Length: 107
Image (tube, rainbow, N blue to C red; front, top):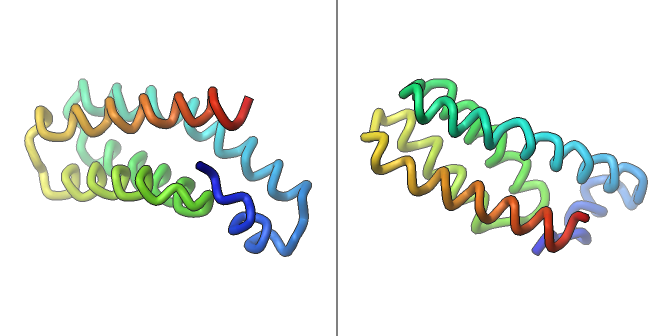
């Protein structure tokens, strides 16, 4: 669940900025998840790490601790050169959870 209070505090109580951030977040999810899947398929761990880092930052701002930790794990495993079969289920889990979040909270 998105922590709107945390986000509102970060945006100095500006509701319009909160809505803008959430819109940017949705755009980032729409862009980064397909990219992460492509990078995983291509074995491009540096770019996969970069995309996971972007999602880690975005989810942290929204107070989505579980998704932040999941993104952080993907980033770390990609940086450490872990096998793709280790990273793949994490990317799938992140994609599923972000899709549900957007459907349930942001539509």
